[in-house]
Image 1 (cartoon, one colour):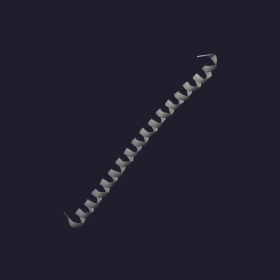
Image 2 (tube, helix red, strand yellow):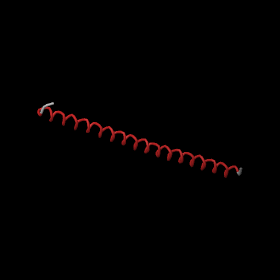
Image 3 (cartoon, rainbow, N blue to C red):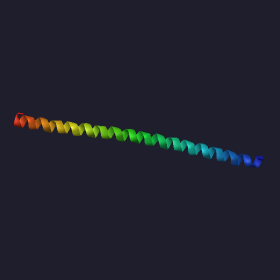
Image 4 (cartoon, rainbow, N blue to C red):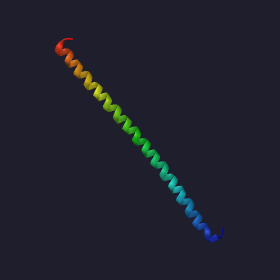
Length: 65
C-alpha cells in the first residue's frame, strides 16, 4: 500500500462506517415502529372489550338479568 492508496482506504472505511450507522438506525426505527404498533393494538383491544362490556351491561339492564 502506498501513500496514494491511503485516501481511498480512508474513504472505504468511512463508507463502511456510514453503512453500519444507517443499518443500526434503521433497526432502531423498525423496533420503535413495532412497539408503537403493539401499543395501538393493545389500545384497540381494550376499547373493543370496553364496548363489548358496555353492550352487555345495557342488555342486562334492559332485560333485568
